[in-house]
Image (tube, rainbow, N blue to C red):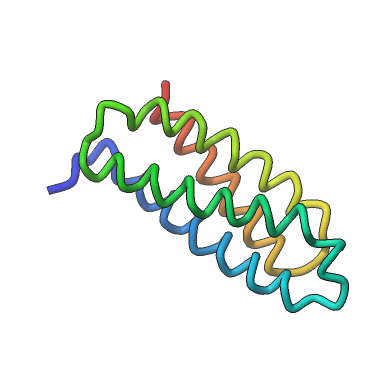
Length: 109
């Protein structure tokens, strides 16, 4: 059974990972993919880091809090980059990243 103190953060990380994967895939279908390169890079990094953070919390790893601190940092960077673009997938990703960053900061505290 999952530790209830992790539940909100695990859900935020999982949702963020999915939003980032969706955003990256959608960015690749944009007319000017080159303009979206940094967004795609951060989406991919953020998705992977969020997924790993969720795994570490799920198994109650001693490294979960430290990893959540990194996850929050990457989520903030991704949210900032996505915020530069008008696409709906970028807006949704930025929102998910901000929520995840908040939950991860709580976890890391």
